[in-house]
Image 1 (cartoon, helix red, strand yellow):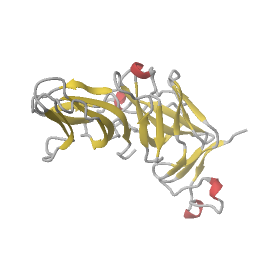
Image 2 (cartoon, one colour; image 1 turned 90 degrees about the vertical axis):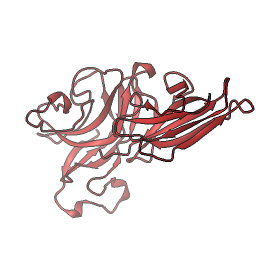
Image 3 (cartoon, rainbow, N blue to C red; image 1 turned 45 degrees about the horizontal axis):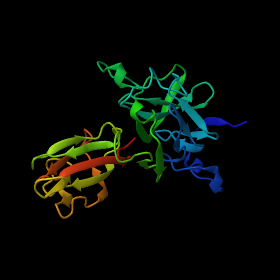
Image 4 (cartoon, one colour; image 1 turned 30 degrees about the vertical axis):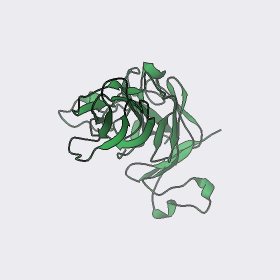
Length: 280
């Protein structure tokens, strides 16, 4: 039978062991616990070890652990039902009376566990009685009916993950801009439909296309203070479809970037993934 427990961390001697297979880590870091989509509403965590946020407890999960978004509490959502367009993050918890490992998903903005006086409780993760917060994993996703709930994804470079939306393609629902023209002005392009809040680097495909009129170009920038934009493509009667450029670009705190087209160029932007860049 698999054993899942949160073990007390009492001295620096517990930080490492003689055997690499013990999956031990430096306090504050994790090994294993990679997320994987099991189905529309079920996220699976692989076996692994993590230290609590304050480094005082070592959390051990020796079996695959499933989080069902149609359930509430530990092993599910902290409350409510999945909402299309809502971002969700993974929280590791511990049962007080026996140190049992647990995990849950929440769309709340803050981990808490204490809700400050005057704050909106809906903005904080709700922990079931008898369970306490240990760590927020540096992974999140946007649940949407447009792509079968939890998106299909591939994670690399865990635990500072690059997340690739493995079903992303050319066309709805992955297009942040389609046949867009800005008349040489800068326009915001919102990416919050695809990126969780702690992902501030987007991986996108961008195409400049000519249909009629004058030749033109497509430019991107991360925010209005960026004086030198990125030229991502130019299109003309002689080169109407110059190809798709794939690039990573920083987005602002509202998960937006800015687009400019010149002449009669048209812009197409598809969201391919994101990097989890902000502290968990």
